[in-house]
Amino acid sequence: MSLIHPTAIIDPSAIVDSSVQIGPYAIIGAKVKIGARTQIGSHTVIEGKTTIGEDNKISHFAAIGGVPQDMKYQGEDTELIIGDRNTIREFTTIHTGTTQDLGKTVIGNDNWIMAYVHIAHDCQVGNHTIFSSNAQIAGHVIVEDWAILGGMSGVHQFVRIGQHSMLGGASALVQDIPPFVIAAGDKAAPHGLNAEGLKRRGFSPETITALRQAYKLLYKDGLTFEDAKMAIQEMITTDPQVESISPETKEKLQEFLNFITASKRGIIR
Image (cartoon, rainbow, N blue to C red):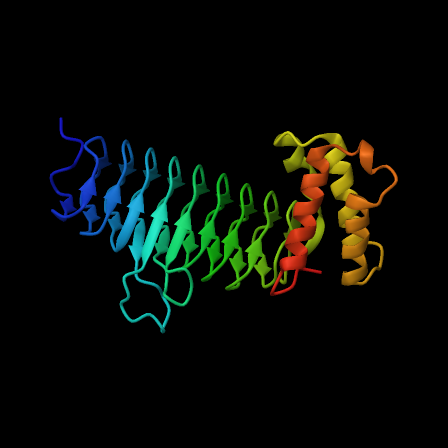
């Protein structure tokens, strides 16, 4: 039995692995490449210069690879790259990039993207993320590994969402979320360390305790931003107990510090 429904429309120039399943009335454009064992649901449209890896599951009525919703876009040959083992549910929209950025939108591996999600042009999404239903991210947003976005949340363009962080449902995010932090609210604000998530992902008690201390220095001790950064740096390099801190703990503290130091939009405060 053919894995491609007879009502599907596939451009002869598309490169589709023989093991790909394509449902009724799906449309696959000329510049599309789809890897092995990927499943495409009915009525889905995949267009543009779009490359999709292996073992993905794309549900019904998704619109993948459409042109950017950016008034500066003038038809340039930009692209969308999607990795392996992603789940992309019904009515999700993901657009190609623009020449004002890297020229490509990138989705990594093992992501869980629920219904009605929108991922705009030039976004860079890592691995193992979760986008709950109706999460919407504007252009040029970076979502690092293991981040979670709650349902009906909205993210401003150029914002970064750090690794292992969590954005609560119906939140409006206009600045960066540091790694490992929970954020929520009409204008998203910090609400503690994502300690439960870190436990589930195998972080040691020592590392979680150290990250709690870094969070406290940044948000709870009344320090200026510059003084908080210096205090976190001291935890890593000049603390008298530094030799007893594991390499994992030092690494995660440094990642936390590097992120907040590099922030261009500013972090949530």
